[in-house]
Length: 119
Image (cartoon, rainbow, N blue to C red; front, side):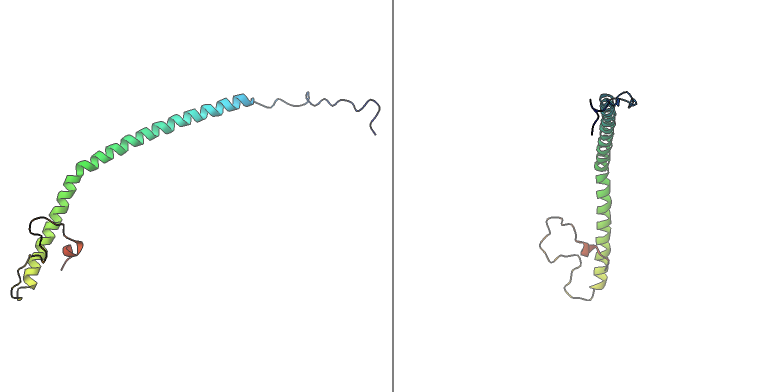
């Protein structure tokens, strides 16, 4: 049973050590760090956006050159195929090399991959 008048009071507050920074200070420092982090992320995104824009402009400037190279390759391949067709079909009467079986004389149709393949 408890003694008369109860147990003596336990002095727990005086024995606890100071526990470092307060919660408000920790929250303020965390918000400060996050603010600095967001600043660096925003600046990095801005730099990345500028580099992407520069890269798109460079690609657009190179596009005509790349298209011209591709056209030269296609025309050379078609010329080679026409020469081979003349050689292969020389004995067939009524065959005119280079003519298409389709009615496409008035406009350019990009050749299919099969037409550009080596014979």
